[in-house]
Each structure stands twice: as C-alpha cells, then as structure tokens.
Length: 279
Ligand code: GLU
Image 1 (cartoon, helix red, strand yellow):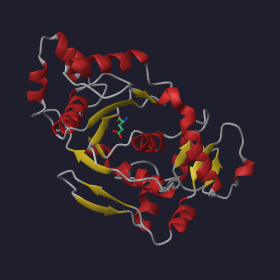
Image 2 (spheres, helix red, strand yellow; image 1 turned 90 degrees about the horizontal axis):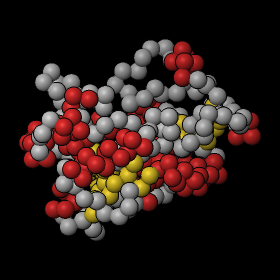
Image 3 (cartoon, rainbow, N blue to C red; image 1 turned 135 degrees about the horizontal axis):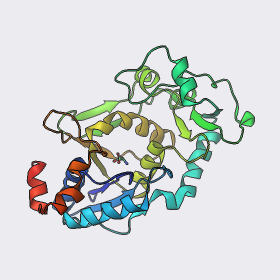
Image 4 (cartoon, rainbow, N blue to C red; image 1 turned 180 degrees about the vertical axis):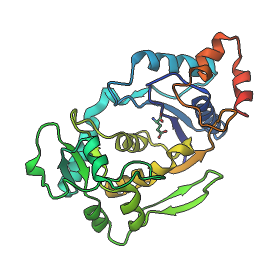
C-alpha cells in the first residue's frame, strides 16, 4: 500500500513553528517513503477561516520547500459531500436534534471536565426524536445506540507515534466518559462538525497514515468510532510531539512572534526553521 499522508491546517491564523514542524514531518515521511503528501484546508468555520490565512499558509509552505500532490482540498467548497454520511447516521437512528447553547451545557455540567478533549454533553435533549427537529438545531450522535450498534466489535486503531505506540481499543466506558453525545451537525448553520469532516476526508483522500500533533490524539477515538459506524476503513495514526516555547508552553496560533511569516521577514531561511524545530 502506498504511503499517503496529509497536512490539514485550519486557515484561522498564520502558520507557526508548530505547524511547520507538523507539515515538514508529514511531507518528509511521504517523500522518504515514495508516497504522497496531500494538503487540505479545514475551513468549515466560515467565521474564523479567512482566504488571507489560506493564501499565507500556501506561501509559507512553498517557501519552506514543501510540495504537495494534487490540488488543495478545501472543505468549504464541498460541504455537500458530508451530507450522505449524516444521512447514514440518521438512517441508522443514531442522531437526535439539540437546541442547547454552550452556556446551557456548561451550566448543566456539575464541574469543569478536566483532561477531557471536549465537554461531554449532559444529555438534555437526548429524549428528542428527529421529527422534532427545528431549523438551527444541532444534530448529536446518540452514543448509547451507537455502541449498541457496534455490539461487541469495539473499534480500534493503530498508533505508530513513539509516545503511545500500539493498538488502542475504544472501550464503551471510555466512550461514555470522554466522548459522549457529540455534535455531528452544528447548531445554527448546520455545517458538519470538524472532526467528522476531517475523518471523512482522510478516507476520501485515501490517507493511509494520519500524521499530526499529539494535541489531537484525544480526537482520534471519536473519529475512529465515527468511521467504524460508517463501515469505513481506519487509517493508521502517528501523533508527534509538540513544539513548545522556552517556558514549555505549546505554541498557539495567536503567537505571531513565532509565525513563519515573521521569521521570513526577519531573514531566516527554511534551513533555520528546520533547525529551530529540531529537524
Ligand atoms: N485542522 C486541524 C488543526 O489545524 C488539524 C486536523 C488534523 O490534522 O487532523 O488543528
């Protein structure tokens, strides 16, 4: 099987050192393996994703000397492509509408959920059926029914990154405490949730190994669960360590001092960037 990986930035800010590390790592692995390196803009957040950031990211990647195979996939240009998956979840009776606001959800949760990738939904709208769906309602996965549907066949995935190498199985208790009834279609605009679009596109782009930062590791069980419910193949995953600042803090997108564009303007070379991220 040909090695195929991708870099999938959200164009909501400039490319910084952490992104550059991720992109170079995935790119070099693909080139080394004689495989393919694809580029995907995860721009479904129509408020925050901006064409200016998209253009700057492409410019920075090119300046870094990276080349990608085929055209750039932009999720905003193919929002309809996610509808069949949502319909399949509906046909399997795994969805329910939800009108809760973020503040209602937080108020219903007794305490902040530390160490959990996202707030686990308290289940306020769980009793609702699809025929009670109102315009603007979100659609949530009914996790208990999803687990029933999988029966004893627990989804699993292979992690090849150094920190958590091995086969990871998604246990029902873990799914209930860490995943819960996740949103698959967003409140308001009805756009597909980020982690579903991303998982579907990994399959649509025939990605064999998802290379990305370990900050996204906790999303993997969610994505693997969704792909399993849809009977889609599960790629392998490789989560790499994160680039941190001098104080050990993970670099954030708003940290413009570490934006690649800032280093470029200051006269650094792509080799300097590789050296700065330890490559
Ligand atoms: N779009 C995500 C981000 O920029 C990355 C998603 C992924 O690599 O799976 O954080």
